[in-house]
Length: 420
Image (cartoon, rainbow, N blue to C red; front, top):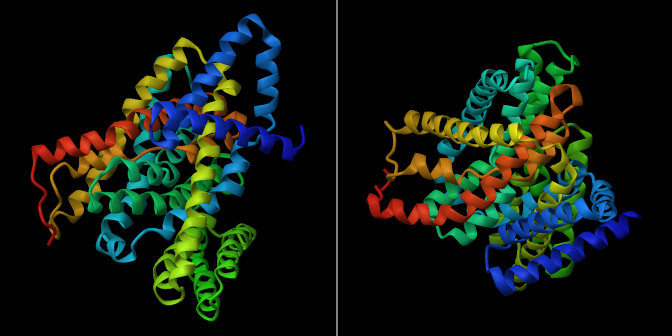
């Protein structure tokens, strides 16, 4: 099939599943579409037991879509910009130290904890692998996914303070997590020696360079927006900012995700306030909200349909290991969240149940699957992809559906403490 035909099939599937969800299930769109695409995959697998040609045909279509490239090279830039566009910078500034620590110390600590736990757990299932490969798995599963978090928190009804913490962390730890993953991957593949200097250089160039680049292109776009009043052209400028900016960041080996987050925050705050008329604001918001909804629908449909590709690799042993790793990942997330909160407690107050909510609200999503697909075969790609898939499905379906209820029950248990 041609690229256009593949996109056409994916759009039709997402549209049908979206309709069925809104008409009958009435779940948050991303969760509903993913669950139904999982059901479709499962039905095709069952039918394939009796009519193999049907499952093979479906697999051949889905198999032509490179999930990792589609997400990391195409969808991610638009989704991150659209998400950052609606984040209030003043709210984010109030939580800056919590977000900064969770997005850096939290990600690194979670990577180490999950990697170490995995290394000692796998031999119990008769699986031997290198410690560096386990750390790679820890790096790809540690960052919370902004795509999953942003869409679900809007419907969960959590408080503004908590929503800002989780949203801000997910926007920034995505870029940091990718850098950690790339650093470990370069060590694992032998491209570079274990050098603190190389890792520091990678961090400075990718993370700080990406944020600086995002600020520059954000300011340039803001300058252009300020000097005209034509919403069609202004929307086009933001579209060029995301498409061209992400491509240029990737070409210069800067963090495209972080660049898009910073640019989105600038346009969504200073640009919205100082450079746009009411008409432009309305059209810009509607445009990027629509882009966000459409790409989310496509992405979560793809996540569910990926079951067709990896289903024949699952065994009872893998399934049991995956269940254990779900618990391990949550426990390591709790530990990684506890450290930044404990560091900041002498200087500020936190509402009751903060650690519990940050743990359960830290959802994993498509980015983890995309990074798992980027693993080399010798690094245990098959095993870690299956484990990642199980963790992501649990995270979105179970945590995503229950985070609102958990928040409301937490409010009943303890009164929020006003921050200093």
